[in-house]
Length: 130
Image 1: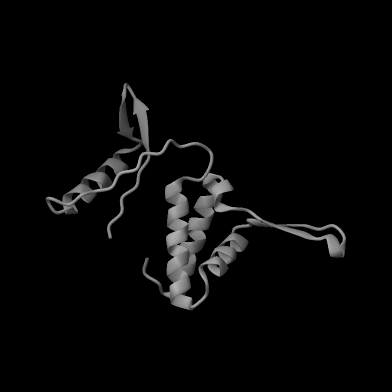
Image 2 (image 1 turned 90 degrees about the vertical axis):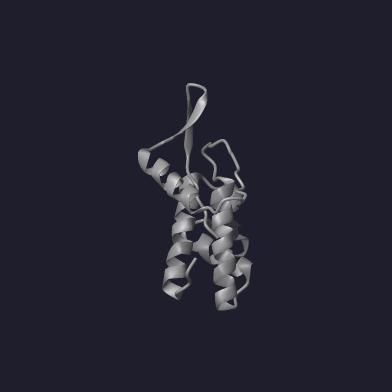
């Protein structure tokens, strides 16, 4: 499965690529699609929160890693969250210690970028081609 993603910016009532490099990658992507194939397109407004595409990418990688290692999907998600600092310990009394695990849906784009990098590194370390 080939995937292309980019960020577009609205200017003069149209959407344009943010760089000529992104436009070139788009053109290369279009050239490899056989005639008659359908392409799914999702437009999502970008804000400070993680995008659906970022979350989907991390989830897909976590599933692949889980399938490869025999761990559960949730175990791999927790490992990724731990590696990028999304597990917070609020230490009170020894009996009152609270652990907060941040949801990917509540992450910033930067936090999700770190999660994507962490899953990519795990795949490299495990020899998984994603």
